[in-house]
Amino acid sequence: MYVVIAGSGRLGSGLARVLSSEGKDVAVIDEPLDRRRLGSSFDGLTVEGNPIDPETLELAGIRKAELFVAAMPSDNMNAAAVQAAREIFMVPMAIARFVDPERELFYRGLGFETVCPTTTGLNQVLDHIRNSAFSPLRATIDPDMTCVLPREDWIGLPLRDIRLSAGRRVAGLVRNGKIREPADAVVVRADDTIVLSRNGR
Image 1 (cartoon, rainbow, N blue to C red):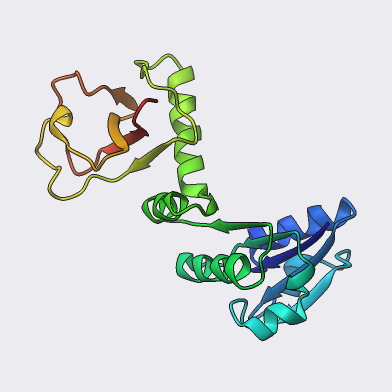
Image 2 (tube, one colour):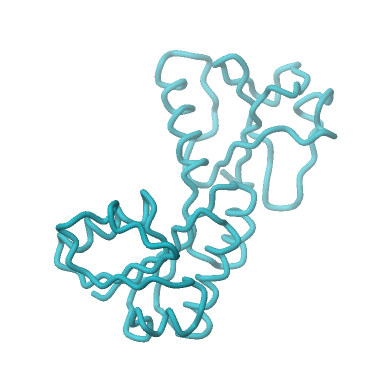
C-alpha cells in the first residue's frame, strides 16, 4: 500500500512511523517539514512543500496512493487537501482530521472520511463517567454522538426545548461530572457540555 500523509506534526509523524514500520510505502508532505518528529528510523519519502499544491502532491506520488491522510493543524487545509486527493487525483480513501466537531460533522455529512480527536476525547471522558457509577445516560456513547459547548441562544432554555436541524437530537448534557437527560428539569448554563446524537440512536 502506498500512503501519502499531509502534515508532520504528532499525528502525521506518528502515523507515518507506524505505517512505515508495518511495511507500507509512505510519503509525508509538510511546510515546514518536521523531520525530528519523523525520527531517523523513518525510511519513507519526505517532500517539503504546500500539501494542497497539486505539484507538491504529484512529487509525493499522489497518483499511485491508495490512502491519503490530511493531518495538518488547520481544519480548512485538511478539508482542501482531502478534496484535492479525492476529486483531482481519485485517491480511493482520503481521511481528514478535524479539531472542530461541528466542522467534522459538516464534512462527514458531505461524504468525507473524517476523524475528530476532540469528539473522541470527549466521548472517552463521558464513557469513563458512565462507567464510574454516575447517573447513566440511556443513549450509547459512540462515534455517532458529539459534544459541543452550548450556543448563546440555548443558554437559559430547558434542555428539552433545544431544537436542532434534522438528523440530530439532544441526548443530554454534562454538568459537574454528571450526565443529565432531556427529561430532567434542567436549564442550560454556559459551562455545560451538550451531548448530541443522530436521530434514531
